[in-house]
Length: 207
Ligand SMILES: C[S@@+](CC[C@H](N)C(=O)[O-])C[C@H]1O[C@@H](n2cnc3c(N)ncnc32)[C@H](O)[C@@H]1O
Image (cartoon, rainbow, N blue to C red):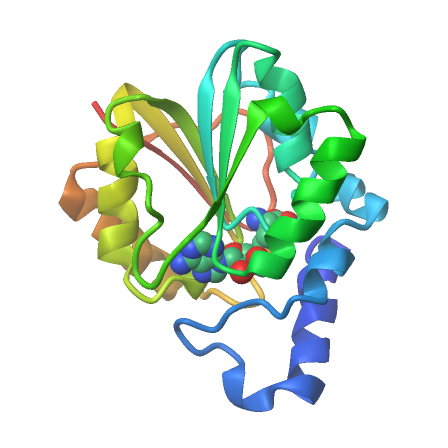
């Protein structure tokens, strides 16, 4: 049950794009975005429970690889009217769906949607402004993890924290450790996580 969503995504990929499976830089297909919005996902990944300990009203949050916004709308509610969620996504179609969902929920004013370019999230303007970043199931899809962590590092205030959650079905413990080593080289330090989050999880902080 624990990794049921990842397992189903994995099976779907196996049949639809077998050549892409487990390849670095593989991008989650657009239609999987709808699947990731399934309300049953809350049983495994409850956004309020996972993110509640990190997010406060008024914060500026960065969400790389937001997809259709399973975590984005809850984040926007948590930061309140004075906060902002910068949601970055490489697939414009994911952003269109998220934009519609945000409008419907009356949260558009708190969400800054950004289309990531090739090799960059385009967040230079956020330098030293971000309090917290949530990277759910995206880092294994990023072709240049060094740039990814460097951009987040630059966007962070001192004390900024990055929650990385990766799916066990796609990312082995070895691969996860290699990813962590990239972040550590840039200067991120590990912090203890309280509470239970499924998958391969780390909390990285900019001292
Ligand atoms: C598996 S989905 C997860 C979506 C969302 N975080 C969630 O948990 O529901 C990964 C998302 O990251 C996006 N993505 C992959 N590489 C990216 C990059 N370099 N920059 C921004 N988004 C990226 C994909 O397009 C996809 O929407």
